[in-house]
Image (cartoon, rainbow, N blue to C red; front, side, top):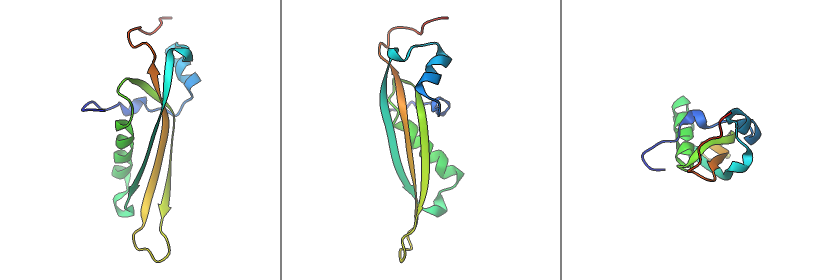
Length: 110
């Protein structure tokens, strides 16, 4: 995504419909693109800072021209197989990037 980071406050766990209602647009003015990331960490390195790094990694996968990410979800799993001293935390993050089809048009005013 380059040097510019996607704003974390635009990663939302609302539906596309709710997002469109909040900005006064029809869903048909947008194209959608899935954003997915799976990261693994050592448990001793995965704390609040680890979660922050994970969400920043997710944000770096969002297309530059996205207006928002909707339907964001994440899940974490602690993996430690018997006999394996190398436990890991796996975090899986998914969302849908909302991208205006015609970048030149401005938002419809109410």
